Image (cartoon, rainbow, N blue to C red; front, side):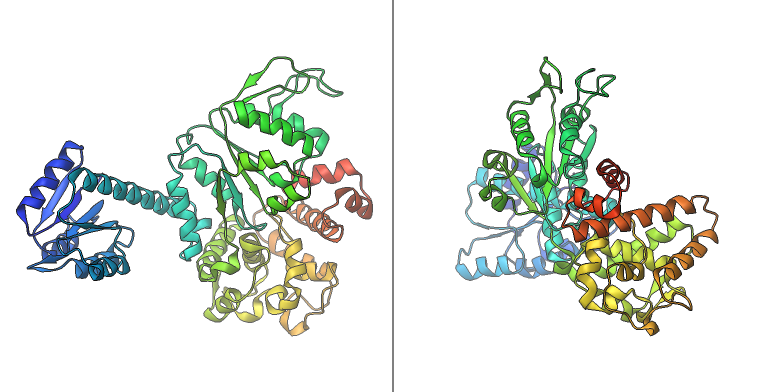
Length: 499
């Protein structure tokens, strides 16, 4: 841990704080005026700065408030505690307006001062966790205040095993947040197990969660551990918890209460030490009012609620995410990464992204394959961006991990016709043209899985389109597609299609 810096022209104050912090096992470094602090920050040995800065407000060598302003420019996440013998309201207001962590009037009670420095240390460590998170998960990068709040929340929860409920629109990255919570928790060395409760049929979900014994039902040839046992010692992520069948909610509540459960067909209680993180895009309070979600389970899961902002709420992050996804797509396809013009970026930044980050990722993948030149211009952007009226319908179909080009989606959903001058997909209209161009692009590489790639995208598009028209009712979607219920369920799982 880096040292705590103390800035005060009064030697007795420095001495008292140094000795008290030393007894707490905390290292310190002292300065007599702000100039010394700034010189140390600019020097080789002070490059990383302190863990916490404790500064007097009035010193012969300069003002503590001026020092606060300069330090915050260099180290915005550094907690700064301002001390002053002039306990007036103006000083306190000025300190907080300039970003001080806390205001400490002199003379102070030493134990309370140490307790305050301890709190500042905890805040500093949370900021470091947030910075590490941003560096290790580029998809979650964000300078927008809404995302900074998410990073800070993850930092605050980093040493906790508390149950967390993540809310947010589809495609906003709820599983990424769950993985980050696991990675930065005391359970980081344990397994992270995820299950989408909406993607598994009701009659199979119980077995998936709790496992089954041999002979428990037709086809159960061997015993099988469920997701709770698989996650023992780690984290279980229950995605789309709002869609869990009511009778299974009762079983889940019992597990959350005492950690015990029975496998399907079993007679011996099994205990699993699991941290549960749940996620939903639905309004669970409304689901409770409607009687389809247990109120006691809601309160058990809703210990800490973490809301993930929609991409339209953090437009300033679109540029950063776009460049990241273009680079990522190029690496996946083994091609040179494409660049994007400022004008095209500006248009993307003004798009509402009803499909959120996942939709932006799909657009970047489409651009990597379909844009004709290395520099992406406004005219190369997909129709959903160029024709805002179509964005909602298109986004409903672009929430899966992979999708066909957006022109095919527009054709499939009978969206308004896009002027041919805006489309560069060949000499004749129709989704077959776009498919042909994309196939030629992929066949021109060293890939040997083009059939599987395009087949998966085609099937994903059809199923998502059917689900969109039936408002998520799978049996009705299967009937429209002319396939069986078991087939559509299996395909939804294989293709990682999410609601």
